[in-house]
Length: 215
Ligand SMILES: Cc1cc2nc3c(=O)[nH]c(=O)nc-3n(C[C@H](O)[C@H](O)[C@H](O)COP(=O)(O)O)c2cc1C
Image (cartoon, rainbow, N blue to C red; front, side, top):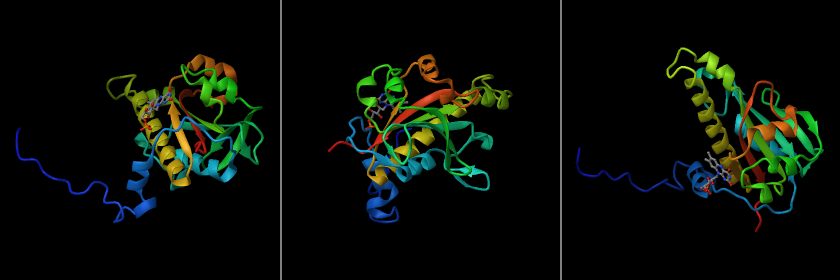
């Protein structure tokens, strides 16, 4: 079909119904991947805001991102290096209580950075990493009757990881923090850092480095 083009008006409508400087369109415009972090710690509330953006609960069994059949197959594990008020270590985000449960001790950033395909030099400098994981097997079983069989459930999980990632990017932009999704890593090497990094039955989906951007 070859008809006349239709104008959509000004992009974003910044300053109008989108909430101006801090509004959604402004955050979408400002969102960028940050790979250069200031040598400054983040605090627990800042990290809490990012974790909530990734997978927080919003009431009546819902979370911040959509989930096929409301299955919620994602998990988030915080790998803390320089987080005020938190010992270096890995912590599982418990969405219901908005709490952290320790799962591994010590600063694991260097080892986790070493599992990436090309990002080891700078990734270890981020004060914290968010490991997004998903129960692909559970989703595969749950959606077994949907074609293509054995794949549809997994696709849903990957889509949901994308929602979680973008939410973290946007919250980071709002809070003056930087973030980047790193999905290029070796799954088996990552598992080998500490088996407890991943919830039982979960596959690693992405790592998000977060912190204050360098000036
Ligand atoms: C699925 C996916 C995987 C990515 N993996 C990596 C990665 O392994 N390392 C990295 O530095 N950036 C990674 N990124 C970030 C992209 O490089 C980045 O989004 C792109 O360069 C565009 O820049 P912007 O995010 O600042 O707009 C990934 C992004 C996506 C969506």
